[in-house]
Length: 255
Image 1: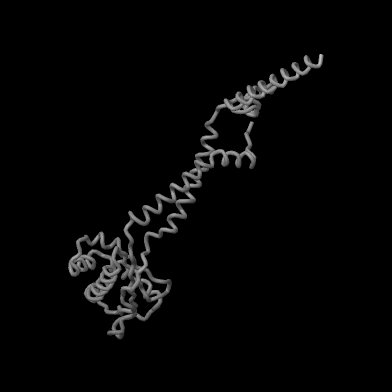
Image 2: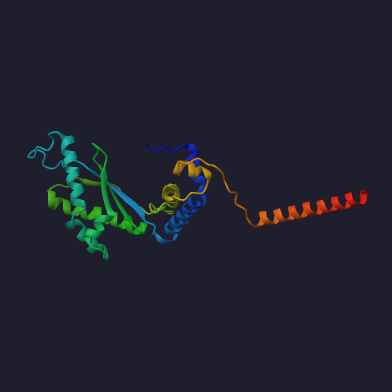
């Protein structure tokens, strides 16, 4: 027999474990804020763009003009691989006296181009926007110098150089987004734990639990009395006894 759960029962479980859920939500938000503001190092991006055109030198002896668009796309894809190759980046590391390897430098670079576009964007991510801009410009310059020897062409022109803005905005971390995600995850984990604890809780606490879990009818119930209830009961009995005594004395006087 399949068990079903109603919306009322769901709200009852959430209400019962509300403090647990609230604690996890607030805790996740605080942890995310601390990590975002005080632990993670901000990173910045700087980009340079170059345009790839067909080499017009010696066109009479080369048949480059056949299907220009397709050729440009193939050339750009090739250039995207060359610009992040070890040959180019090793020279960048040496020229800038960087303390990282060409492989580590390659992880900071990303190359992209729009479909059917001859414009290529080289983006560098670093903890300093100034260093990111220098790496982007130096990489493009080294690539342009090495290209004639590698491809026997010279068809790359700088469209825009990487510059340092006055008030740079870090691309990572994003504290507000991180905190929002942490709050949602904390709430989801809290609700999940609430239902897990409710599922694992086999104790019988109410008359309804007896009927639901044991399938037995309720014949009677013993009320729970705390110390306050006992004190109130004793005071009521004392008050009743006092009233009864007064009535007895009054009745005796009447007789």
